[in-house]
Image (cartoon, rainbow, N blue to C red; front, side, top):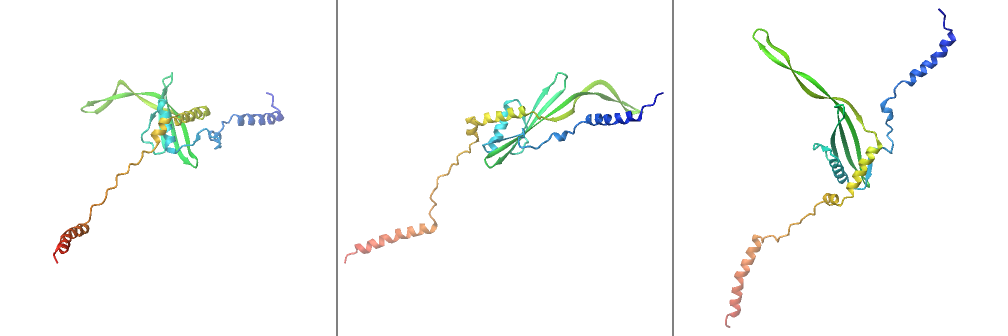
Length: 220
């Protein structure tokens, strides 16, 4: 058996280490840059309430179902998809509208979740006097959804289309009229009823006037 020269061993060792280092997967969080040109935000020159109203109309117009439990200033929508392999996917959109000095900023985040269909057999209980109850399968199955993965959508074109749709809705004059505050109706001001003192004074004046007239008409 031939021995491998020692210089060949130390010559291949750096190559093996370099190959091993290159095959190490890159950490996922290193893709987050927190840069100013983030695709998840868009500034609009309207109040935050009107921006969220436009986001709601945009999601509803694209077939999303809205979550009524969302807090004020935020919108949540969900849309379901079905792939050819029977796997279900759900796209959840979370939108937050925050006011700023020149209008408001819309922050959007899309999360896609995938589910697999899992079947589990049912079991029926058979009562036996001595042994108690015995669980036996009866051949039926129950379908349940099992979450497989979650992933945040990073596609810039996806968010660009979403914010462009919001801008289109904001240009609709009907939305502007619906978002305008209702005019305040003021009730007519009525004069207060006369007080008791004023009534007494008026009555006394009415009683005194005839006496003065009698003195003036008295013959001299």
